[in-house]
Image 1 (cartoon, rainbow, N blue to C red):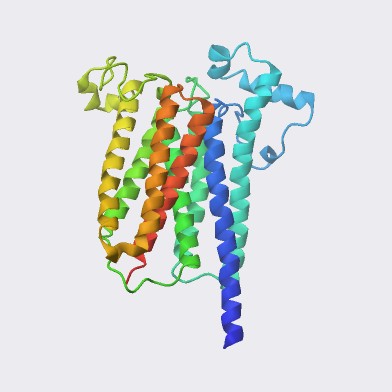
Image 2 (image 1 turned 90 degrees about the vertical axis):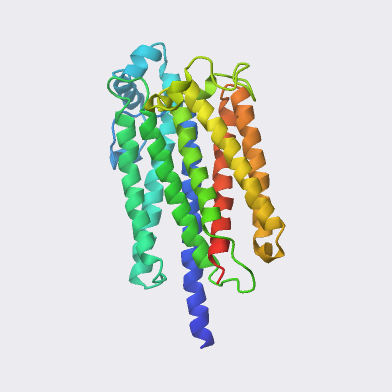
Length: 346
């Protein structure tokens, strides 16, 4: 009996370590993807060679060939016509690292998944979700290339809608992996506490995901480099370069100043909503099991808002913008833990 328990624990530990590794790799992938966007490196590799693309150029001839291909797209001849080969290498390496990480994640996910499945080391209630994640990872590769193709012909940048879809799907994969990791790490339930209405933490998490998607639109439209002031936008609450009617139309998602306005105000909404959640948890001793997580979320949220403000004031300085994106990963991570802890109450 004891030996069986030890074997079962070892199986769970192997799956747990695997899930933790993949979850961390996806988080790193999100950060590198953000830096790829911030450095305008996403269009430096104009072909999707799934196998041969694993190997970087090693000779001057190979570099010149890749540079020649880059010179054929609008981004080069309309914006970067004075770029040197040395400068091209910088943006190439960012995009190469991003794609290489994608391949590593795919390999590190599918091979252990098949192994654990064959050895029957996966919990029955997680098998379907783990294979759904496999599909999402493969689909994410397609979305990534679909995004890149939008900037290779008539545009000098990728579609901000496709960029947002790409980032949102990355977070969906990250959240799904994190959720399964938590299932394997904490398989016990809390029995002695009342349960916070489940829709409350779920709604909070959903709003964070929406805000992240809007943030990608801000990045895709370069909306972070305008209106470098806070709390007002050039002395106005609403941007003075657009009419109020735009806010209530589809054009809002095409107008940089308005999308920045939306991103700002969703942040205020999130903060107010979370103050309500925090107050509800702290005032009631029956929610003791959630208090540490709730306080951690509050700290993460305050830091994230502060980083957002600094990003605006700096005109989307790369370091601050990247820290802001890292902050979104931390905030969403803590929000998922809150949802999970509340979910585990009987």
